[in-house]
Length: 124
Image (cartoon, rainbow, N blue to C red; front, side, top):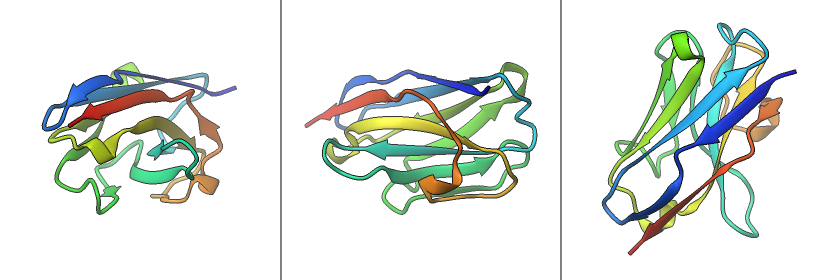
């Protein structure tokens, strides 16, 4: 069984920063693809960023390029989403996801494992 636990969400003013963490346990993630998605109330879950667990290949949604950075700490089995220059439109619940295959995936249907989500609210 795979467990993903997000943390680090909160309330921040526009232009501020937050760092989300996603701690993974239960499986070895050395070959897994990881992703971050976000969801606003009443809307579909949308892609934010993805990368392989190993290697540096990363892809971002156009709306967050240059502002968000997806990184990992293999020793801690944890991935991070550094969020800078935040905007009110970044407000959403952010989810960490893992896919038990190699690749970079932007569709939520490719991911088998999900965290519980963490709320990010950006005030104007």
